[in-house]
Each structure stands twice: as C-alpha cells, then as structure tokens.
Length: 577
Image (tube, rainbow, N blue to C red; front, top):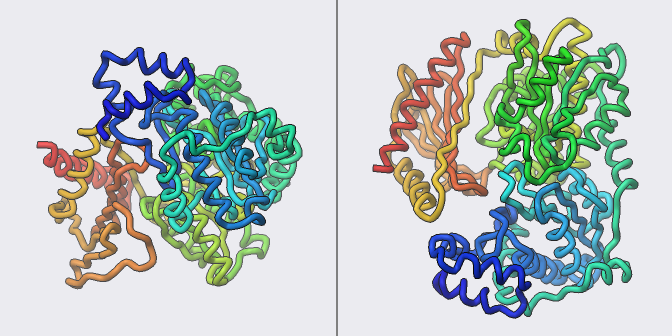
C-alpha cells in the first residue's frame, strides 16, 4: 500500500478523533509531509517506539499506542492467567502527550483484563524498572523520548526482570503487534472505569520512599567527607528534580542548588531546546549559577533521568566537561576502592560495558582484579548479562556503564539510573574534596598511571528516506573498504558484529564472535591501543563514529584522535559521491 492510500484510509477512519482528521486535512496539499507521515509504519523494535508526535503511521500518537499495547496485552495473555494477573507498571516523563499516552496504554491493558500500576505523576525511568521488580509485574512501560527534541515522544517496554526486552521477548511481541492491523481489534475501557474496577491502580509516594531508601544503601562513605561541597544541579525541566534532590537531602548534603529556570517540568524545554546533557550547551544555565555560587561540581540529568553528565571546576575557575567514559572510570575507581577498603570486593567481581565504550574503566578495574565483560550497545544488554551472572554464578555484578553517560551500580534497578549515579558522584566529589582533590585531579592521577585516553563521538545526521539509504550505503561500503593505517598506527584487527567475524591481520586468521549477538557494528583496532567503531543509531537518523586514542602524553593522544577523525570521515564521505 502506498503512502497516499494510507493517508486516505486514515482520513476516512471513523475511529479517529475529529481533531486528528482536521490535522490530516490541513496537510492535504503538502505531498512531502504526507509521504513523511505515511511512507512507513513507526517501527517497534527492542528499544520500543520513538518518533515525532503527530497523526500518521510514522508518528507517535494514541492510535499507535493502542495498537502496540494491544499487541503487548495479547502477548502477555498467551502465558496464562497467572502472568496476566501480575500486571504491568507504567511511568511517563514530562513530554507532550506523555500523560495521554500512558492513560491510553493503561486503558487498553485494563480492557484486556490486565492489572496496571500507573504512577500518579511523572517519574524517572529507573524508578519504573524498580517498580516492575517491586510489584513482581510481568511487564513495564515508560512513555519517554529520553533526550530527543521537544516534538518527539516514545514508548519503551520492560519485562519481568525490570530490564528492557531482549530479542527472546521482542521478536514474538513484534510479530504479535504486526497482527494488529486495525483499531477495531483493540480492546479498551474508559480510564476512569478502569480505576473504579481496580484494574488500574494509581501508585506514587509509597514506591518513591522504598526506591530512594534502596538507592541510599549504595552509600560507600558517609563520614569524613565534605557534605557541604557546593553543587549545582539541573534536571533540564525533566523528571529528575524531586528524586535527585530528595536522595541528596536525605544523605545530608546541604549545599545543593537547582537551576531555577530548569527546575520544573517543561515539555517545550524552553531554556535548552535539545535536552541532552552530553551536549555542553545544556549546561549554560548551570555554569552561570555555578560561577555565582562558586560551585565545584555541576550535574545535569536528561528528561527521563536515566542519564547524567557532569562538569568540574578547574584551578582557573573554568568548568570542564567529563564525558561518559571518564565519569564511568571515576565511578569504577571510587566504587572498587571503597569496596576493597571495606573488604567487600568479591573475588569474581565484574563490570559490564558496551562494545563502543572506552577501555579506561577496564584498565582501572583490572588493577583491582575485576573482570570487564562487553555487550552490545543498550542497557538492556548490560542487564541481560546480570541475569546470566546470577544463573551461572560466573561473576558478581558490580557496575555497568555506557559511554553515553548511563551508569548503574545495583541489581535492584535493571536500567541506567541517574538518581543513584548523582548520589554516588556527589559522595565521590565530597570524599576527594575532603582530601584536597577535585575529580579532575583524580582523573589526572589515573591518566598518569594508566596512560592518556582521548575519545570523541561524532554523528552524521541524514534525515528522511534518502538519509536512511545513504546510512545503509556507508555501512556496506565501509565493510568492503576501510583504512589500513592511521598515521603511524597500523590496523591489527577488526570485528564485524553483523557477520560475527573478527579479522586478525597480525596472525592472518579469522575467528567467530560467539559471545555477542549480531548487530550492525564495525570496530577497528590498532597496534597502539587506539580504536574506533561505526554503527547506525537505532532510534535516530544518524550514523555514529566512536573514536578512541591512547598515548603516553595527552598531546600525543589528542593528535592521534585528530588523525583518526580526518581519515575516517574522508572515507565515509567518499560513499556520498
């Protein structure tokens, strides 16, 4: 069916609201807009749904929510009455239509006889993961688009372990969702009726308290640290304001200041535009307040409060941004040194990182006799390894992280968690401040010991249908033709995760990659410890280039990174010709 036929079918669907019909009528003369809205169905994958808000098959709207939730309900009901009775927990963030989408999902689940635990107001994504485990629910839903711009929203599905679904659940679920071809197949009840029947239960403060108390159990050092350290925090108008401030207050940190312009929820993200704390522009208001208050640490969480970024004041009163690799490495050092100090470091301890996360943390962990295990990008894969550890007894999980500023230090949440990360980061900064060091001083000490690591992530954005085709062309082209050297550094091996093959040029052999599932990722390793990786984004129209260099000096590491960027970009751009 072509996009104009889909447009016509939606325009004449009696189940659509009049206001949505009007929205479709308003674009009747804009064939390009019609094509963009209807050329494909918004795809449900292992990361759920994410797209621009609007009416159409390639948009986030309540009709898409209804169909996907009906597919989820059908899937849950295939397991039997016991699983269905366990229910589904639902949380949402501050984005436009998050409340409506959450209530729509709750109404559909209730219409299928499935109990719902719906948070009374916006909550951070990690608290949803916690709630799934707390209630022993069969599944969970978070309505969020994470750090995407204001015109996006999304829908993520969790399973009974509290983690986002993996392929063993996602594939049959996606097949079931594909069978829902019409809104007439959707069973639903009025939201208020669902509440009166008891199938929709509203939850809130009672779960907040249990969750915050569990986060506080991660405390490593509560005395002989400077609890008056000055910190500026911005939730970027998202869900982090209340839980982050609460856990820090209950821990006794007395000098935490929130950016007033970004304190309250705002689905338009008026003060920041693109609410991604990885982008240092998101810290503009925090820096201004930090200089006014002489703050030593700045923190920012993304709208659904599962990711956290920091900036640290240097000796010249400037704020220096730390990336996810650096922050993760510092947390690893703090966590492992604290556990060792308290004789709580297990013999079979392990940290888990994604394949596109740097090796700085791995080197630190090795110093403590702790193993590093790699998985595909996505915290669902990190949490899947936690399950494997528990089943086999092979390792004791200690910490999981990704370069994209996601961290987790506990099994009671099976996702990245900026609330626990914020608490540990402030505690760590307070510990070292008491000893006359900043986090920058600590990082420099670690660089001198392990070597200087430099990294950079660059995304090539290519929008629309033509952009998707170009991204596919770049990945296929690079598989067949790639640089053999970077300056003085020679390529020693590369791994193609889509074909599960590692090519070892040094020993002239190929080996099969058995421990990581297939994924469209390429990774290239050089003889000096430098490497880079390429992968298309699973949620945005971009191809990502992850670059890592290592050298004995910072200057040398920087120059290697610059050479890498020039060579790889020239190769990528050659496929556009």
